[in-house]
Image (cartoon, rainbow, N blue to C red):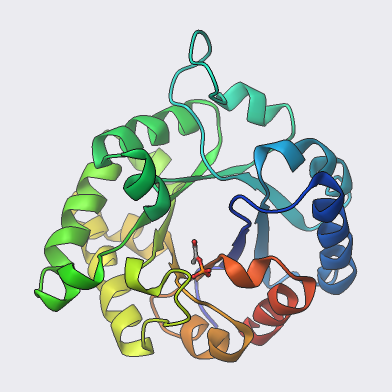
Length: 253
Ligand code: PEP
């Protein structure tokens, strides 16, 4: 029995019409309504938050968003603020996903600003970090993770850190079908936890949940989720269908 409760989140990315989102959530409710051992989160696109939030009112599944703007409100065309997410009872927000870092130029410093804004609105950030294949092959994994963890968590108070989730997502494992081996995942997670001990203290390090992300599927979920420092999963592709997401959850219990 682990001291940290597993948290498994589905990142739907830029997929699903409202009707498709509703179907998926209805299916997940049927499959997963009895699950109490794991915290469950779905992160639909913004356009589906309203309808999905209504379906989750009487559910053990919580709602997350995939990004947010760090400013409270105002002239930021095309952006979504924390208070808008709160309207739909969003509890979590993914920040600094590698796709946002790569395609939209998000930096550690920017992610940290978003994380502070999320906490100011009582949203729990899921902060993503992870090395590229090139960085791993050059032996720079720890240096990259240290820079990302220190930079992306900058300015968070101890209390905020305790309400923050970290997702270790090696970029080479995202959407590639190539997951980290249990040894690679455990090593990275233990390293991130040791950073938290240095930045905060041992209690924070022991309590913060660190998810693994990168080609998690029903067939590898058990071997990853049983690792001592892996406290859940951030699931992309396999979260788009009821069967695969439900099986990941069930295989993790
Ligand atoms: C992700 O994008 O967060 C992710 C882990 O994707 P996938 O599961 O598809 O690798």
